[in-house]
Amino acid sequence: MPTWEVRDPADPRLAPFAALTRSGPRDTVVVEGEIAVERALASSHLVTAVLLTAAHRQRLDALLDPAIPVFVATAAMVREVVGFDFHRGCLAVMPRPVASWTDAVRDHDGLRRVLVAEGLADPANLGAVIRNARALGVDMVLHGRGADPWSRRAIRAAMGLGFSMPVIRCDDLAQAVQGVRARMGEAARVLAAVVQPGAVTLTHYQPPARAIVLVGNEGAGLSEALRAQADDAVTIPLADGVDSLNVAAATAVVLYALAAADGDGGRRSEPRSASGAVK
Image (cartoon, rainbow, N blue to C red):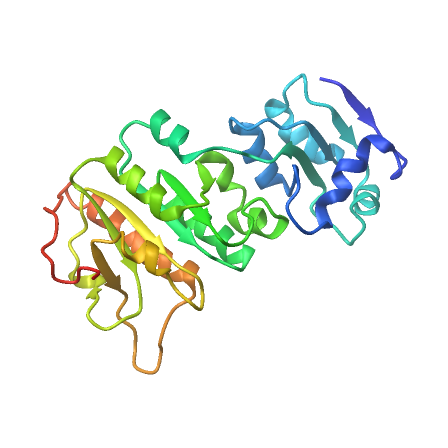
């Protein structure tokens, strides 16, 4: 693989790595930290260049494709390139992952768990939700009207786990839910995680064999258009005086309940009755 030791932070070949602190959507994504870079390199996504210290270079050697330009520098010089007190010593540059839900559904056999995150404004929350989803058996994450999952904070919160599963932006989440549900089959249920009277408490909910889980904005919750797609409304029982959980924590609880049902002797429930259905 082409490897260069670099000593000048103004080297024009390093310019893409300086984009780490730029805000707003961009075509190039900068991944920081050895764990996240390792997951990007091990994924099907294209990595176009790596900047790292000699120690990180040695540890990641087996994953570095011979075609990827590798720039080796001191930790101090890496900090100069990114322009702040950066201690992770390892960066990768890649094109922004782009996919459509129609292609992802077509290419994925046996969808069982899909998570839909609508309007999550905090990139750290969105990243944590993606991390939870990957850890708890979700096959695909759809998102829209919120933070960028390929921003620095979101990738860091997700620990790079968004590279190992489809994470897809949808302009029309309600339409996407309809299409994904059709692909999953009649046994699939759409459940909305909400804080509202009349919702079924998670401890009394019988998870379906296949589920699409909806979680919404940290303050406003789910839009009416998306709520209209849900068969069931579920809520997490909380102690008196506590009105809600952080969206990432609530998502983890709901997904764990579904995963626990998967591991309980393989038992599956029939679709629920109208009790707790979203009107």
